[in-house]
Amino acid sequence: MGRIESLPLHSESIDVAWLSTVIHQFDDRDTAAGELHRVIRPGGRVLVRGFLSDVTITGLFSMFPGIERSADSFPSTDSVVSSFESAGFTLDRVTDVVEPWEFDLVAWTERVRSVRHIDSGLRPLTDTEFDKGLQVVTEAFSATNGPIASDGTLRLVVLRK
Ligand SMILES: C[S@@+](CC[C@H](N)C(=O)[O-])C[C@H]1O[C@@H](n2cnc3c(N)ncnc32)[C@H](O)[C@@H]1O
Image (cartoon, rainbow, N blue to C red; front, side, top):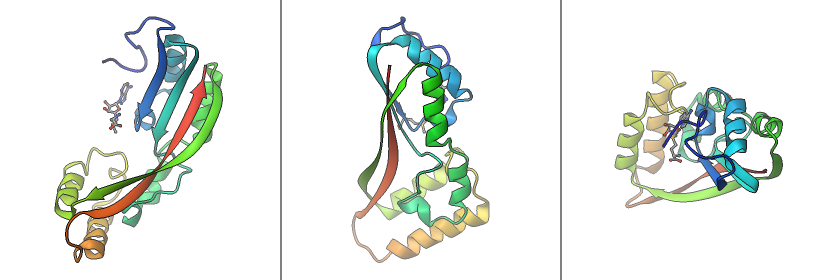
């Protein structure tokens, strides 16, 4: 456990850092990248998985009006790569990963309501947009019995020290 700005790890003590849907929450990405550069061994990798502003939103959230504003609040791929390159990393590759999943409409709706004011993608929406999004998803899938198949795309940025 610890914060990215000051990791409780010895210098050059790890081979891989896996940053999953977290990069958009860092206050200072340059400091984060510098700290990762300190703790990763030469030849090690950072894998950044997340929603980035230049990746088209797919899946259920794409059905919410106003979701483009949420996307715009995320960092771009270029800005993430730039922070890591400034810290001494080299870009290895950028790839988009389609992640299939199944959901139950009632459970999904409850979960989305419970994170409405904390989820970075939902927070920027107005109440009207949020309610409309739930309505559109419900109307689209309410006739479906059992689990509903969907998928979402997240970007994976791999950097090498
Ligand atoms: C959307 S959650 C992702 C959780 C998990 N990695 C996953 O993929 O499901 C974002 C996480 O980033 C963490 N976080 C935000 N700012 C951070 C920071 N400066 N240092 C370390 N973790 C941070 C939060 O505590 C939260 O657990």
